[in-house]
Length: 268
Image (cartoon, rainbow, N blue to C red; front, side):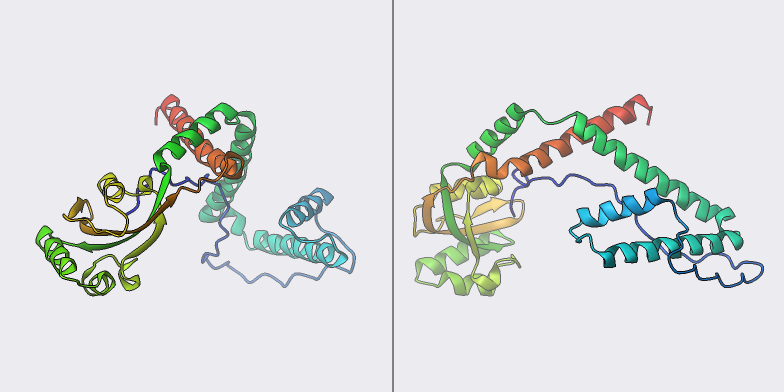
């Protein structure tokens, strides 16, 4: 129903998916790993520092308990990695491919983050995008209900029943095919016309407060009967409030353009 013109695109983030896959059985079972003595570390300090920084960035407090948990995790990981190598799993083709892809993902994620830092969206572009969206939204918001049906004749029949005193809510619950609103009597709440496909938005503007559309409104979804319950001045959030979303939207488009140029240069 709603147009995608005003939605803020989420910036794509590369993540490493941790997967557990069945591997070929080793020719011979490996001996259990010996537990590391208390206080012994099997990992580089740089790994500990990095993981601690990541956990703190995620909101965990820097406590002795957290540091101990990280030590245990890194030691366990190292012991398991050693056992995997004893079982020759590091020579398995699928495992090698996964390791290579995981390493590539980390490298790509770091590069994209660096590229974004070096190519910020100009403030003027953000302001221009804000002004465009604000213009599309208009200066009014409308509280509307609608009934969506398959055919024009069905919509005309509903209009005829409304003209005879039929209840909009009851007709919506009984006949609307919009699953998102029919159980609420067709209620779509407050919206700007620009948030809908054009024929629907235009009909909202043209219909007086308290009235329903005298003719069916056709969109790609079917035929609508629209009731405008109320009208008010639009509540447009200030620029500073939506600036992060604007940055995310434009940065996503900026990245997409860069990716396309990169593929073109690479001949793919």
